Image 1 (cartoon, rainbow, N blue to C red):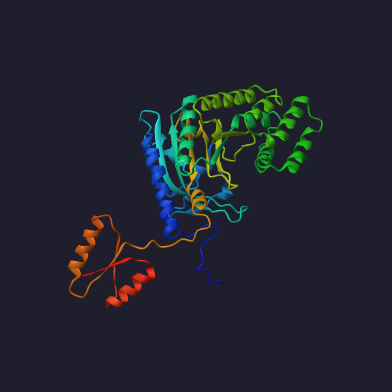
Image 2 (tube, rainbow, N blue to C red):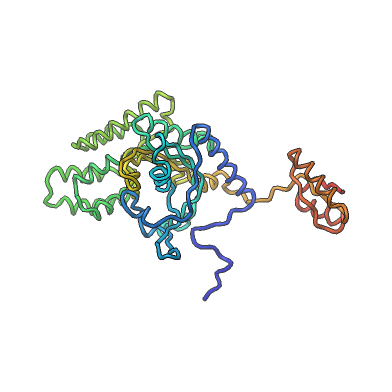
Length: 395
């Protein structure tokens, strides 16, 4: 067997020196911002029971989960998502608490992406969950919080695309009730695979009634319905479905309020924004930056998820920022380097106490120090010069 001890698993990576400093700094900024908006930090286990993510509305694709077995034979997963554990906490440990609950978190998730070479399987997410928060005020707060959180990362170069799960569901359910076919249509729309989407819809249209044909025509257009507010008007012309129309009206109302707040330039629409995660029930949104193709943020409303853990439906909405994707943008094309300390402290044998007292004095002044491990001052000075340490203190 080939020796793989010097390698790391596919989808994982090491983070070194200044790159890690940039990541930690971003995590602190986002954490401080979330707390300033009334969110309290939580942390959930890295290991969770498999059933929590594969039943009810939290039905994540099984092939995307890292699985293992505990010593009693129960099937576990390495945390693939932070929303489901937050819902579990709210429904169990905090079930008697006053709503809404406002959580924030900063933790890793692990999702296998076999078809996306080069994508990380472990990512750090910083996000919020508003549990027990319903209505347009909660949706507005979540969107505004998402926009302001991204503004702490970038200088106005991002955009947030808005969609609505109800729009796609209403149309596709008027066309077919076959879950496998619905999933195929969803995947092709998300991939914007026009040719394959047309093939599957053409097969459905054979001997279909006018309602089904009209739904198929709308689904064909869905991957192209993205851009400014005009796409909402265009979409209305394609449908004769009450639920789909109500979803469009709600998106329009949201946009009116964002416009009144002077934030409309940060938001666009993508009615082809569909998701494999089944727990979303209302608006969904994703954040992008112009220089990168992939999303850096995702979120949405998930009003039915908590019923998986308790005997009642509780409304909720949240989002998560991909810290690793953001950091990759911020430090793009730069090599990770070691930031040298302000001082190197060299001491002769017998002066350990004085040397470490001097180190404490300097660090109390906000300086960074490194203790020299060399036998001679000449060796210490040579080392300091090679590492870029400007000051050598001798004790």
